[in-house]
Length: 145
Image (cartoon, rainbow, N blue to C red; front, top):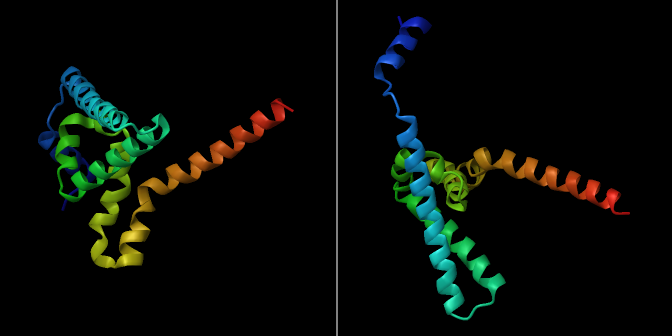
């Protein structure tokens, strides 16, 4: 029978020690590469003579699409394994967080699998983000009256 102590020892034996400085460097480089790709996409849209607002919107949509596509192809998790927080911070990380539960549970059906599971991780972020925006907006409105 596996006790908590035995389990803790097993986890300690099997867990690899991480090199903090190397992990930070990888996160910086991979996160920076994602942002550099995003900047390159923005520059391409600007070269196509789109307005700055439209180019920025299309850049975000393109990065979200790339994040979801890489998640569906099981490549984003490989990138995140090495990039750590560097893959979480850009918008592609949010796309991954939204799409990975949906992709994982698509076999459960369109509504109870795909649609419901998509908000398991992102739901709290959306709820608290919206609530914070309303509160900050009210505070701003009250202080500028």
